Length: 180
Length: 149
Image (tube, rainbow over all chains, first blue to last red; front, side, top):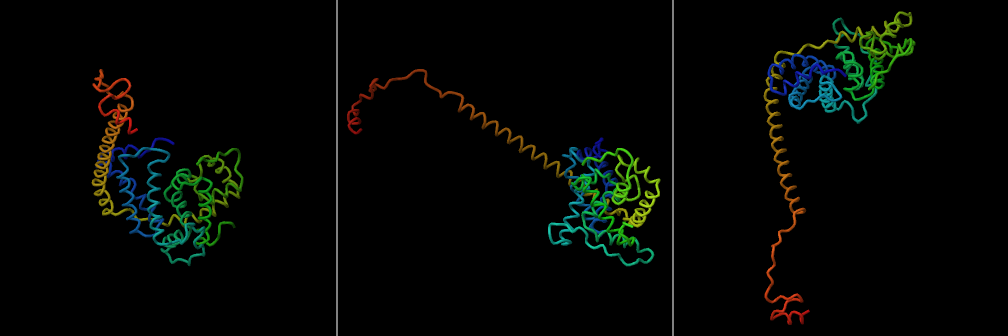
């Protein structure tokens, strides 16, 4: 693992540098907000998660030491944990075991311009761990190793979650299961 | 979280598995397998697999998230000053408590060391009681004391 590109900024934040704070928010807020919005499907809740994630960043900045994970991977983990707290509160599942597939029936045909909403609905209908894998790799552009690290699973397990998630999305959005 | 290393040409099964997982864009594929994958992508089978994965990618690309509002940006920045200051103060106090604890522990350890290692302070001479002999107390109550035994 190379040098962490965020390390210097984090050190400056820990020292109370207001310019570094602004730079960190400008650099990470769009990513954290997008992550939370796709995980939760709710813009207001995503803003709350983004705010809480940054509070944790400020709290940990002065004691931050790079360990196994990069700072960016760590804040993804923090934001994801906050998302899961909210998903649990919504009682999206009733047991500790996450469902493999929530519902992969094809979504109704969209009117022009509704495709974005269809994708959002489809993402919310797959299992949260599959959604998490797809959001991290596809939308957040984390490498497979970084995504597996953020999810605390092996690369093989990540690939399995990605494949199952994409197959469900394929069935809902494209109308086949990807096995043609 | 080790990544697979690719030796030799890629087969259709692995190519399809990677496309199933990562989609049609090679930059998302594991770096160690990209070169072999690009070679296989030139085959008819490779093209068909990528075309199918690309249909879903095109749908996923339509899902865009609006950027953060200015109000959210400023709210987060405003909260930072307080949070960082509070955290630094908290760390300062914990450091103070830590140092005080270390000092206290050192004092207790020093006292214990002195108690265990250092001998009791003995007078450098012993004043014999006038009634004491080397056989015991020879004072006026000594007989009574012996009878009581």
